[in-house]
Length: 191
Image (cartoon, rainbow, N blue to C red):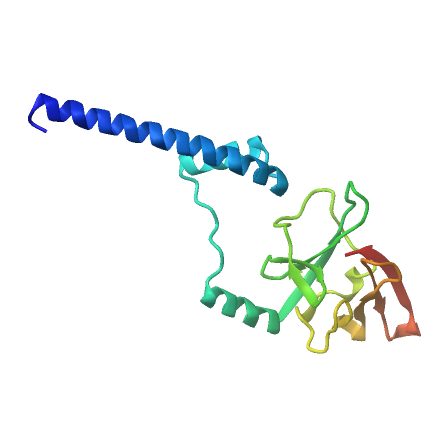
């Protein structure tokens, strides 16, 4: 490093490495471009991801063993269901979003209630009028005797919210069964 010839040699070596890595990056990018298309990754998504990385924004980490164990326990415990929200989707359908007393949100899934993408109440959401009279209720998120898309949540005043497979593929029906007048309301939704 103290002789001019050695410095020039180091610069040339670094330039060669830079050229190799640029060529390697070009080859890898070319090969991955077809894979990106298969996975639906657009240039915009990749650019946004790169900007997030460069800005230092941290990604939410995947759950570890302890977190998964804690989540499994949470699914077996009773939770206070305080509201059930409904709203219209652009691509048709009306999802139900279940709000617990702790502020968490859940949706119907094959085994009971499962996680949802919704994290807050939106202005266009309405409380479901058929379920509202039977809340609040203490429920277990994953009923013990559930079968795929076939389970029951016990609500207030001896009523039940039931879920069954629908008549058409990829649909399910649900309803409210009450002890009063032995009435039942039924609804059908897409899975």
